[in-house]
Length: 189
Image (cartoon, rainbow, N blue to C red; front, side):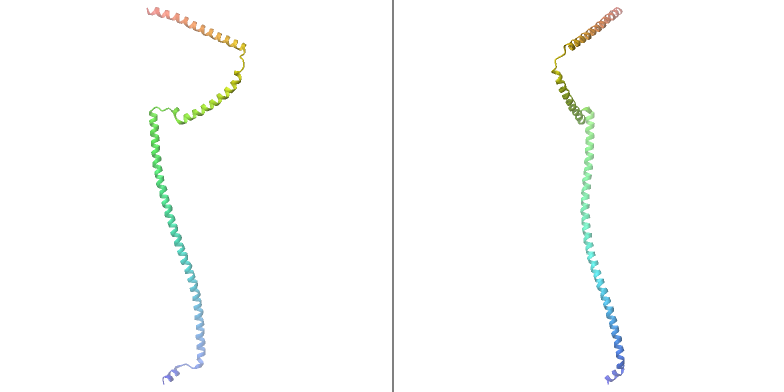
């Protein structure tokens, strides 16, 4: 009886074919949709994998950059400390130099005794020595010559005239002093 009742509820066999066709079409549509979803899922998985790889690469790059930044920061700090030390030393040396200059100035240090002036004088001396050396070489050729007797006589005559003029001038001044002194002696007495 049960069998009979369930058979009577079933649709007639001629209506199965369109229903099967309809279900088959739905199945094909669902399978096509599943394939599209699977394709999209593969694409999304691929993109997600690339994104994860990129994220890990960026994290590593960021970590390296931070390490480099920290290392550079440490170097810069060392350089800054060294610069501060050098500035302090520079100021200290400037103060010491000024103090020494002041002490030398009060002690009567002359500019002619400074290193620069001594070097300059040494250079000038070297130049003069070179010039005198060349002049001596030129003069050496003249020293070997015999003196000219007529020139010697002329020089002797010039010297005698100069001596005579000087003696005359001296006598004149002595005579003038004799005239002035007796007058002063008379006035005092």
